[in-house]
Length: 189
Image (tube, rainbow, N blue to C red):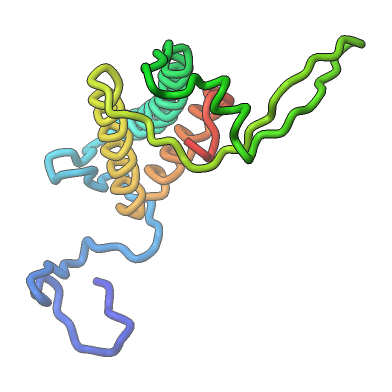
């Protein structure tokens, strides 16, 4: 039985503010092969079942990294598609070329590459551009974000069991997933 560090008397199984303070609560890493994962019904009862749980957590960690990479690639693809859209000039509005030439933040410059000079206009970005909501993109983005959050929370709960095997499995899955697809996403995504 674990004793609280703040000095109050406590008996195993008693309730404190509605929380069950039973003796199976761990505050340090432990290596029990019968640590429940997510529910009491998922409690390994043999070495094989424990190994299966470890393999599950490894795969879940890899899937988490695959989803992060998949989302980053999808975001890049969606942005490319958006940038390739054709813009229509509306009567009474200046075309983009004329807007740029009259913009106070634009500067005429010469670009040189391989001995060839070309006159260009460099325009400073004035404000952030909010991308419009699209039926073809945003629901899929929401599903990906929800899956990523859900798997992240499941991995966090596995670590919170304080089982060293589960913890190492989560780290191993993170390592293997990043090794496989880490180059496809970065911290900005």
